[in-house]
Amino acid sequence: MELKDAVAVVTGANRGLGRHLAAQLMERGAKVYAAARRPETVDLPGAVPLRLDVTDAESIRAAARTASDVTLLVNNAGISTGTPLMTGSPDMVRLEMEVNFFGPLAVTRAFAPVIESNGGGAVLNVLSVLSWLHPADLGAYAAAKAAAWALTGAVREELAPRDITVSALHVGYMDTDMAVGVPAHQKTAPAEVAAQALAGIERGLPEILADETTRHVKRSLAASPNAA
Ligand SMILES: NC(=O)c1ccc[n+]([C@@H]2O[C@H](COP(=O)([O-])OP(=O)(O)OC[C@H]3O[C@@H](n4cnc5c(N)ncnc54)[C@H](OP(=O)(O)O)[C@@H]3O)[C@@H](O)[C@H]2O)c1
Image 1: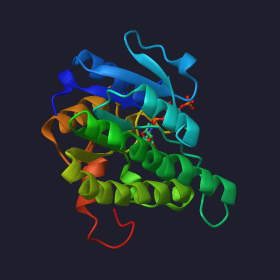
Image 2: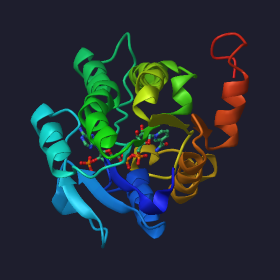
Image 3: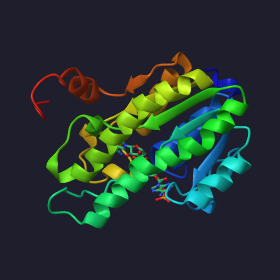
């Protein structure tokens, strides 16, 4: 899709990757709704702050009513709680699924009719290399991102007849708050990841693999579990 004519809503646009995605979309000429749980934390001149908690059905409904001109939805908001599946808190496992799986599903269900009524467009789901690689210490996160990968494939097929393309961005560690304890040399700059994501949307790519680790893990999927 042509980003200069797009009207985008980016979830979790107040910091991290979402903020870079929103800023770069505006640089390319798009109108941007910068969605955040606390819209007062959005400091992006030119963006329209929008209240949206991806776990709150009423806030999703209200956001879709307000941002009625949207043609591009970026499901970026996410959490990583470092919860293992066997010994971690069940409440935290459910929270990871709520934010990283049910959240993007609910937001997509709300915005698909909006995008369709504006003549079609695109959805980008921010996923992870951990959609495919499932380390025990991040079990809840990996399970949620794996589920969100399946969601992306199924929704891609379901929305294609409605002229909405659905893409996934898979990425390893990025230099954001989420990966604050990870050594710098293992992290990609979120600005670089955002640039790749937007180039992928422009090309209509179904899957955007943002770093060499992610490409390597994808290539290794036919090997034994977690061999990558
Ligand atoms: N950083 C990495 O290494 C990495 C790697 C692979 C994939 N990812 C994915 O990249 C995406 C962006 O993450 P990031 O690295 O930019 O993390 P981040 O800096 O921690 O930012 C997370 C964003 O999500 C928002 N958020 C959390 N829960 C929300 C909710 N219930 N409703 C609405 N917004 C919510 C946060 O808002 P608040 O400010 O209100 O908390 C914040 O804007 C996520 O989907 C993440 O899983 C990250």
